[in-house]
Image (cartoon, rainbow, N blue to C red; front, side, top):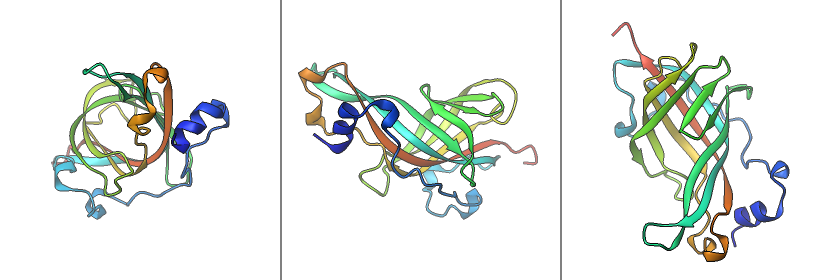
Length: 186
């Protein structure tokens, strides 16, 4: 049993805290993000409107796969979005959905992914907005990048067996999220 699964099984939920909750300052702008692969770049007619560091959990559920065998499936993320000073400015949850402190929300779907340089971490993504709610910072978001991920992988496949079907496991993760909106000057 992995330490993550053991902690999830033994510790009460409120006693758990995400690993690496230390504030990380994302790079200043997309032009200085030379480590982001071209396939994950936001369209040229969009501009960066917010960069946030996420710290939280990827929540997995043990259930039956299409072949009938037990397997871990992503249920939802649960992470705070932090500004460069470590202040909570939003939240990331199931949908996937991002909610800013002004109440505006954006939902998105994956458009491209690249494996993380760290094989123990979830992939880097480019997401395309598919819905908005409210007026504010996220009202016009068109693209979102998830990069610089740490952790978040599901527990080992062997830890999801018939005795654990319908159980959940939390895997701590951090990531940088870059939010883009149409650039009216282009």
